[in-house]
Each structure stands twice: as structure tokens, then as C-alpha cells.
Amino acid sequence: MRHYFVLFLFGILLAASSCRTDFDTVASSGDLKFSKDTVYLDTVFKNIGSSTYNLKVYNRSKEDINIPTIQLKNGLNSKYRMTVDGMNGNNGKIFNNVTLLAKDSLYIFIETTADITDANPVDFLYTDEIQFDSGSNLQKVALVTLIQDAVFLYPKQNPDGTKEKIEIDGKDVDGFYLDENDETNGNQLLFTNDKPYVIYGYAGVPENKTVAFEAGSRVHFHDNSGLFVSNNAELQINGNVSTTKNLENEVIFEGDRLEPEYSDVPGQWNSIIFADGSTNHSINHLTLKNAKIGLDIRNQDASTFQIKNTQIYDCSNYGILAQNAKINGENIIINYAGLAALSCVYGGDYKFTHCTFNNTWSGGQQFAVNLSNKLAGATPETNPLTQATFNNCIIYGSNTNEFNLDKNTNTAFIYQLNNCLLKFGSTSNPDYQFGTDTAHYNAIILNENPKFFNLNLNKLNIDKTSAAFAKGNQAYTIPFDIIGNTRTSPPDLGAYQSKDFPK
Image 1 (tube, one colour):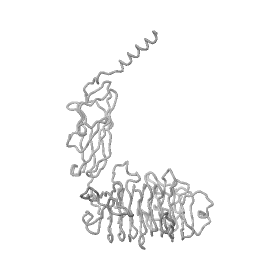
Image 2: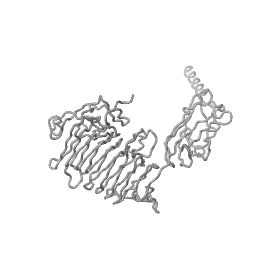
Image 3: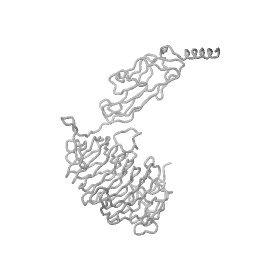
Image 4: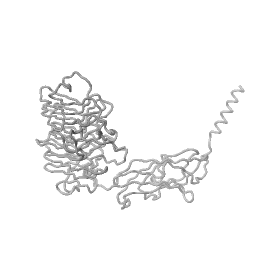
């Protein structure tokens, strides 16, 4: 009995020692520590909310402290907003009497939504600071973000509250048709390099119109947005070789989140759709990133779609999806796609020279290149593949087989690979006899590593140690590579001429 009494008494003493009076604290003395002295919120477009950034505040002392105020220097007029340990304070701007326990820490989460007029007109930086306490105990953490001006294009709001719609594939989607009132410089629908463009919904190119993008133009697409090129409409992308890493002459299509952590996230926006009957398209020096389907090309008219010096990265479905299209592609790079880097289905006519198709998407059976003369649900379900020629190309990736043929033998299926580096496992299937089937395969380099510089950074450059070095056929040479370097004789395979990697 005495034993149980002792245990009971010990429990009471332990509980008493664990109980605290109602947050007995001492005033802060300006000795807070911070995880950073400046919070950089990266670049945002005007009036578009930023991502959420965090700051950790530490109390290194042995006493619980009370911080009289945590506030933004600009107070209620600040374009920043905070939460402090889950509390919103006064509109996320001012917090009073914040308790921070001994040897503990708290999180502050920071966001901003600012206009270009709020920023410094010289460097376009919008700044403020978080102030802890005041007077001799005042401590500060700076806040900095770059505000970028832009042209915003979006569907109009109807009187009943609904948004303007356009029809794509028989469905009404949020969208609008470009015209001379959309700040695209007149009725030729020209996108300039003066400011970036941000598109919400689908921007439609009307019938019998041409949309053109001049060198250096930038287009950012919001979630579920894209570009739709209508029947008899035309797209011209007129980029050029850049001389710096800023890609000053490249035309760039990507999502509208500018923070670095979004730079290689797939599926941030939808696609560039070329409708059946659209015509005479030309793409030169385009970099396209982070779409669901990069270029979604439906059966056009009889004109050839020219795609040159183009890079397509990080698409959640396809880099290029072509249905019964006619494409001539030179110096194209596609890397990382959820289904296929290049998928040509329902027949068509294709010629690709000095292209690099690579797919390192994990978690399934993806391909670098898929060819088919079928399309489920189409009428008829098969269509002739009159040509699919690959010259001096690299077709590679992380799966065992990166080249797929899906054919109906009752319909034409004509294809040929010449001087290509190809990844494919062993098989007895007669369609994949790369060493003996000279009607379809010539000078194939099988399952040798091209040794790309850095796949994770979408740098598919090669050097002289690559299996693709000097393995091309001079008869198919494109004189300059994707960044303007002169090709040697014999040429290297793929879109890049080999160079020594930077040290």
C-alpha cells in the first residue's frame, strides 16, 4: 500500500512540475534569430499572387518571451501578407503579443500580390520588411520580389457572369479569339518582344488569320490554357539563334509560374492545338515547356508543317502528338513526356533529320517515338502512313524499348531509319530486326549511350565520347545544329554538334 502511495505522490509532483502558469513570459530583448535575413519571393507578374515563402524565427534563450509586435514596415498598405504560427493577425500585416517559448521556434509564411506601379521604376523590385519589436529591440528581415509587367489576354466576362467560350473538338471551353484589340499589334496578330504575354483560357486564331511571334517573344499560359489555331488559320514562329544563355532571340512558351521550383514541372498548361484544316505553319527557334501536350497537330491541309530548331521539355502526355499530319522536322529536341516524346498516329507523312527524341519518364511504358496508322474511334480506324523517315537521329530513354510500331497490316505503313542511335531490347518480332531488315533500318547504332550532358536540366548536348559522335551520314546533313554551330563531316547524330562539356 505504501508503495502505491509513493507512486501516487510522485505522479502529483510530476504533474505539478509539468503545469505552467498562464504563459509566464519576459519581454523580448532583440535577440531573436532568423533562418534568413532576406526573403526573396522570386519573380511574379503584376497582380498575380506569388507562391508562399517561409521564414523561421528562433528563441535561443532559456526563457519564454513575448514579442510585442511583428509587423510589416508598410503596415496595412503593404502588398505583402503573412501568417504567424497559423494566425492571421490584422489582415496579415500586424501581429501583437506573440509568445515564443524557450528554445523553440515559429514559422512565418509570406505571400505577395503587387502591381508594376508598386515597384521601383528603375529595377522593378517591390520591397518591404518584417519588423520584430521596436526601439532598441527592433529587428528586421527584408522582403524582396521582382514584379514583371505583361500583356494579359483572357476571355471576356458575360453579363450573366459566365465567361466567353470558343469551340474545340465540339466542346465549348473558356476562350476567346485574338483580334486587333488584343494588344497583339494590329490585324496580323503579331506577338512582339516588348512585354511577355499571359494567356488565360484558350486564345483562338480566327479562320483566315495568321498569328506570328517575333524573335524574343515570351508567352506564359495559365492552368488549363493554350493556343488554338483554327481551320484555314496559320501560325508562324520566327525565333532566331541566341548568343547568350538568356535565349534573347528564342520564342518561349511556358507556364505562368515564374518561381524556379516550377521550371520543370509538367502539365502546368494545356497545349498548342492545330485544328484540322489549319495551314502553312512554320516554327523556328521555339522552346516549349511544361505543357500537357506540347504541339497537338491534327490533319491539316496538304501543306507541310515546318518545325526547325525547336526544344520541347517536360510534357505530362506528349511533346508532339500528330494525327495524319505532314511534318518536316529538323534539329528538334524533345525530352521527358508522360506517354511519348513524339507520337505520330493515324498515318501521315513525316521526315525528321538531326533530331533528338529522349524520354526518361519513370513509372510506366513510355516511348521516345511511337508510330501508328490507327486511331481508336476514328472513321475509318486506319489511315495510311505514307512516310516516316528518321535521318541522323537519336531515339533514346530510360525504358528498355524507346521505339514503338503500332500498325494495321491492311493499310500502308512505310517507315525508315537511317544512321540513327536507337534504344531497343532484343526481340524476335520481325518489325524490329535492326541488323538485317535493310528495307527499314540502315546503319543503326543499337543500345549505346549517347552520354547527354545533363538530362535533369534538359541539356542533351553531347561530346566526343558519345556513341553518337561522327556517326551521321553526310547525305542527310543539316549544315548548322540547333544553336547555330557548324556541323562537321561526318556529322554527329542528333540536334547538337558535339562540343567539350564545360568544366
